[in-house]
Length: 137
Length: 386
Ligand SMILES: Cc1ncc(COP(=O)(O)O)c(C=O)c1O
Ligand SMILES: [Zn+2]
Picture 1 (cartoon, rainbow over the protein chains, first blue to last red):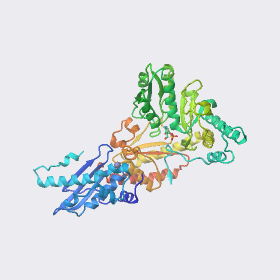
Picture 2: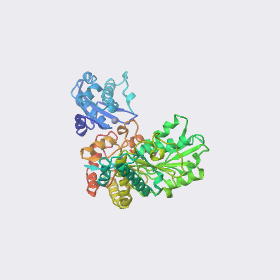
Picture 3: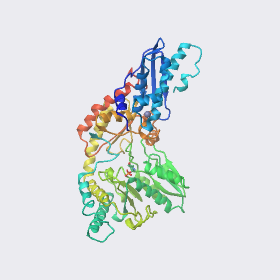
Picture 4: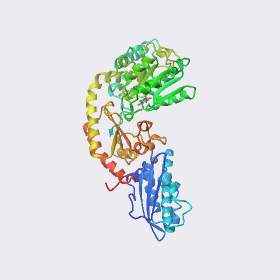
């Protein structure tokens, strides 16, 4: 396991972990194959992600990327947060071992799923084009 | 550092290292040559052969040196398959073998052999009846491991050998995790071939041996010179062979005492973890299990995370989780004993050995519960209300 110091640091002391009571959006994404599961909770105010928390069942890479994606998204406008990519998350961590790249895919997907869930709830009735359930376990 | 990964490898015993050094130095001769230093080297090889023979209760002529456990497994399986190809092309093995056996069998499937992979029960034990029913007219080899490297389960090898004898099929056992840990007698077992590896019992890496019972004919593995009676050509790894011989000599003398000591530590570790961490599963057979091995699954969390946290504390262990396997699948052994993916994902193997102390066990008991709760705190599967 050749993780960068940054990955180890984030794995060891993840930020924004836990859950939010009465969240405005929740996204659960999982990698059925390797089994990693990530759940992201968001609280939105004025189109801004005011609070964000994660729960992750997975390896060091999955936990570190969860933490980073929540930090990158916190305080951002929804539109901006949707632009956060896996690459950005991985670059932030100084890279991941090639075999671990798939674990990091959850970060972007998880955030998008939470935002989609928020938007679905906002619209209340009209279904969004990408249903968050598609990604759910 | 606290090392609890002795099933992965062991540190070389100082006495072993000392036994090896002369053959890197003054006694560097090629055992096949005629002069003095060559004769000394030749003697060292034969002394090692005799020491391994004592460990296994066989004749020295029945021991063939290899480059390790993997080569011994490859040779036994391919050697038997090629030797008997006109008699039949069916091989029986189990689903929990080491990859050295499984992937060798798979390679034979690609060239026209058929392989039956026997299932195991929840403890990892092969069903003898199922084995009997799987033997066909064209079965040429049965290969079932002695003790499993991940969960430590010990197979009823003697019974298997008896079954096999009735059917007139070759029987090989991968005893890489058993040799040097527990007393073995190939005579008593009735195995036709048995693999072992030096670095699993305080010998050097890259040297192992295959026991081939007198009268059992298998195809050579390496072609070349006349070393190892022409069956395994190549100038002998003299220092390595001297080392594995010394390791065998030491194991034969000390393993029974070690067993008592290490089993106590393992049992204390197991009981302590069960006391301190809720919702765990201990894998492997409750009794028929290597005395040094503790394999458990901590539910709702993932193994690599556990290993990383243990590593921060200076504790070395291993896991069969998908994220540590290098593939995307959790350990084939844990799946074969019927664990669901998400539980197999949380596996932790602690395997003890010579240098572990009570303090080591206490240290693990001190830090592991905290690691489990920390990871459970961030797991979406952990019910925090509890
Ligand atoms: C059961 C078993 N068979 C075979 C091997 C391979 O042995 P070696 O590392 O000497 O090639 C190992 C060790 O990893 C093992 O545990
Ligand atoms: Zn992962």
